[in-house]
Image 1 (cartoon, protein in one colour):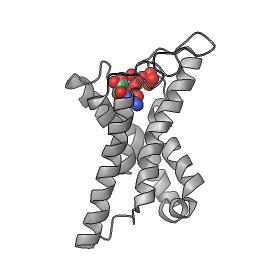
Image 2: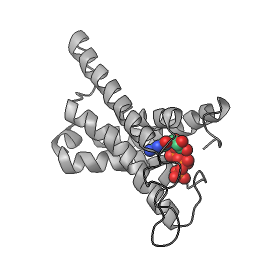
Image 3: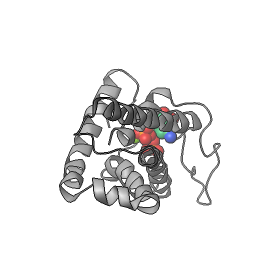
Length: 166
Ligand code: CTP
Ligand code: MG
């Protein structure tokens, strides 16, 4: 899951500049995605996820690390891209519901990356998804994700990368 988990914190560290929606509003008069979704965060975040996944693949090859669950390059790209597309789609619906940028939106804020990553895998590499993400693995991901999300956001707040601890 590292290729899916890394893009969000990297986007928070490196984001800024031109927003993905180019500051445009939707038909309801609110922003399409908001200032929290920028091109730099999106692109650097995806590259970071693909980078860590590539390192995982190379490490598994070099040292024959058996516990790494057979990551492949397509899976790495889908995990990283899906994570930030999920985050983007979440922000779209967050704005439609009138929730301000950065405000808390429980459940969606925690699971957007998992939903996005697994949806892309389901569409483009379902064989990998079903062979690697078995039910116990899926349950562990569902438990681990909100815990990691909380811990990383508290760290982000403490080091002043995030304005709020969620
Ligand atoms: N970020 C970015 N580009 C992205 C995703 C995130 O630049 N595609 C950066 C932004 O600086 C953002 C921070 O990472 O403020 C934290 O991300 P997130 O919590 O997802 O955004 P929020 O600011 O909370 O916005 P939203 O309410 O839309 O989720
Ligand atoms: Mg947020």
